[in-house]
Image (cartoon, rainbow, N blue to C red; front, side, top):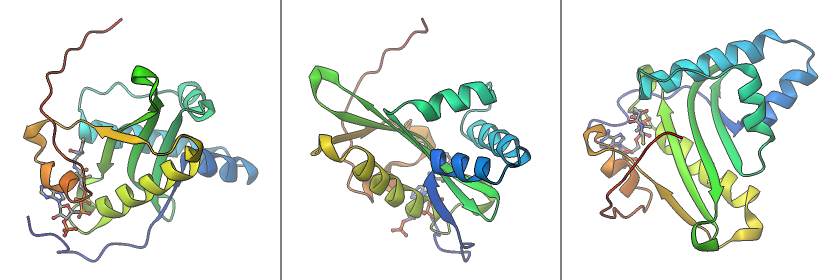
Length: 166
Ligand SMILES: CC(C)(COP(=O)(O)OP(=O)(O)OC[C@H]1O[C@@H](n2cnc3c(N)ncnc32)[C@H](O)[C@@H]1OP(=O)(O)O)[C@@H](O)C(=O)NCCC(=O)NCCS
């Protein structure tokens, strides 16, 4: 892959909770609604069938102490997102990283790296009392992201995944 082919725009990466609080503090509602629409669109870049979340659902996620939703902005434009979720399989604190996306237009210029690095920093900050933490993520082979994740020190484990909806 020909990385760094474009100069990345200046970005800020933050916990979506902080973005939400700062935006609410300004007393204007439109950027929150726009942010949720942009988030839904980003997740559709990952899975076109993604149904999207409502504002109520979004606010519910932000209230969960086990969740860190990460937003990467350039100005007010949402360019990327990732999510970190704390769970306790075998009663051991474990983080699942999921929904890592950089919007297509800005891929290959270092923003994915920045997003992952800052997500790990936010995980260390939020879940400091549980460290050392096992951090896991799953990515389908066809996404071609193996070297991306290996580049951050994630080892690939063979696993058979079973799934159903309840
Ligand atoms: C995966 C994704 C987040 C990477 O973001 P990005 O901004 O393109 O990545 P970067 O430009 O920061 O690249 C970081 C490193 O990973 C490598 N890399 C990135 N995407 C890669 C890919 N698809 N295949 C191989 N290497 C890749 C780059 O070469 C770069 O290496 P370097 O830092 O040593 O030069 C982005 O391509 C994306 O959103 N893809 C679609 C959604 C997706 O599949 N997400 C993963 C779901 S689990």
